[in-house]
Amino acid sequence: MHLMTTGPVLTIHRAADEIGGNCIELQHDGHRLLLDAGSPLESDGATEPQGAVPRTLDTSRNIAGLVLSHPHQDHWGLLRALPASWPVWSGAATETLIRMTASLSGGAVAQRFQAYRSQESFCVGPFTITPFLADHSAFDAHMLLVDVGGKRVLYSGDFRRVGRKAVLVDRLMKNPPTGVDVLLHEGTTLGRAKAFPTESALEDDFVALFQRTRGRVFITWSAQNIDRTVTLYRACKKTRRTLVLDLYTIDVLERLSALRDTLPTLGWPQVCAVVTSSLKWSYESPDRMNTPAFVERVATSGHATGAAKLAGRRVAVVMLRPSLLRDFRKKGVEPAADDATITQIHASGHASRDDLEAFARAIGPRRLVPIHSFTWDEHLEGFANVERLRDGEVLEIP
Ligand SMILES: [Zn+2]
Ligand SMILES: [Zn+2]
Image 1 (tube, rainbow, N blue to C red):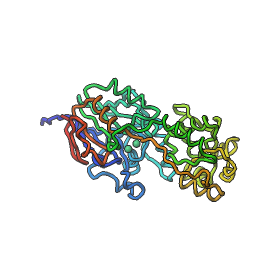
Image 2 (cartoon, rainbow, N blue to C red):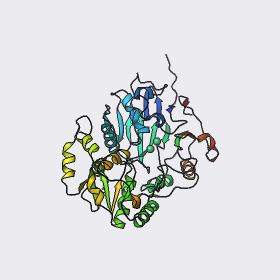
Image 3 (cartoon, rainbow, N blue to C red):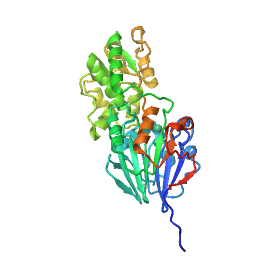
């Protein structure tokens, strides 16, 4: 019997009409490749992982591979609900950050990972994948180019052009992959037309804030937003303040420094660790971070302090999160009158509409398939060759 062979088939299982929960499948010749497996942002924490598996994703059959773009949960959080035998590919730092996030909440990711490197192609079944390191608020974020059956799909992942790696996106736009049949294009901040402030503009804002504040400055940011940590460290250097980081952030910086970039961490001038009771508990618990030696090493490094001692440090810039605040309060450390001005200093992790349109023009795909936004339908006019898919809809790549 002669089987009619068709070209590769694309399905967005989820994220056609929402931000996050990305789960995209390419099928060719009976082989399946998944791009990201995220938990939906809207149900984070509330939904059992099993309930978050998209209806159209067949978990009963094997896959050739699952390739992750970056370590945000809306791109990998579904792993816990997927077969442990499914092989996963990601950047090395992405695996590190994913496993740290999972351990911190007392979970584990069962799948085995293989590491890919930016601009080095690798094969999974009939699929050839080329990752491109990009700029995003997550460390180690990649765009993924997939070649299969004579067709070419570029998945933008999440990206921006205002962070410390903006030049990587600019370079890709100047010298884009040719003949892209389908561009899977993220659109998180389509509603914002003009460019966001850059991380270096933010650095100036923080310097000004640190100069005009008499006492300590408390700042909330994500431990895994490395660009922001670097921005804050640089602002501290310029204003002779000490950056006080919690155990988890120190751990993140140490592990990532060991893998690739040199990042500010314990032992660098003006970096101090604060040892707080709940994180100390997490690190010492066998079913959490399970590295008591790390706590011991930090505590005896000569660059650590307890929460109570922070009360006397007027020139500190102190990391703050709800869980840390609880521990700080117990030790009498709280934002006070002279350090209690509330200011928002932030740059987006995503590209503005102008930048999204410029990116799409630079790639010039035969089909642009929108993903990762709630508002694509309101903003389609600035984009050419749009092929609107809904979750679960199948596109045979023409
Ligand atoms: Zn995302
Ligand atoms: Zn992201």
